[in-house]
Structure formats: structure tokens, C-alpha cells
Image 1 (cartoon, helix red, strand yellow):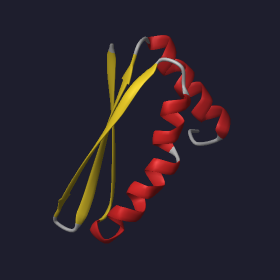
Image 2 (cartoon, helix red, strand yellow):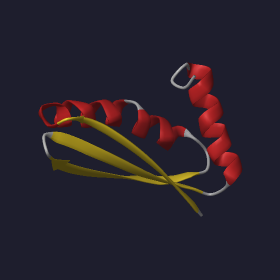
Image 3 (cartoon, one colour):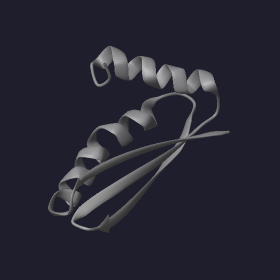
Length: 78
């Protein structure tokens, strides 16, 4: 199993809105990709900012490549 870590930041006031956005986009997308074994979301608030850490679990490098290819094709990555 392979774990991939992604981090993002937002203002503390936007933390709940951003989490809802993640649930509707990235987390939903991860779950739809063959080879994804789950995603953990960690959130820490300090100094007026909310830090989000996503730890996605994958069965292979091929599954991760498929994820990035799909995101690139959809325009979410440049």
C-alpha cells in the first residue's frame, strides 16, 4: 500500500466551507478511482488559518497515475 499526502490551507473562517468543498470534489473523486483504499482528512486550526492534510491510500503506483491523469484531463491540474 502507498500513502500520498496533500496539504491545503484556508482562512479559519472558511474552514467548514472548504471541508464541504473537499467532500464534494476531491474526496468523492478519490473514492471513484479504482485502486483507492481510502482517504483520511486531518484539520488543524492555528494563527487564523486552517490547515488540511489529506492522506490517501492506494494499492499501486498505477492507481496513483490514473488519479493524476483523470485530474489533469478534467482541468483540475495544469
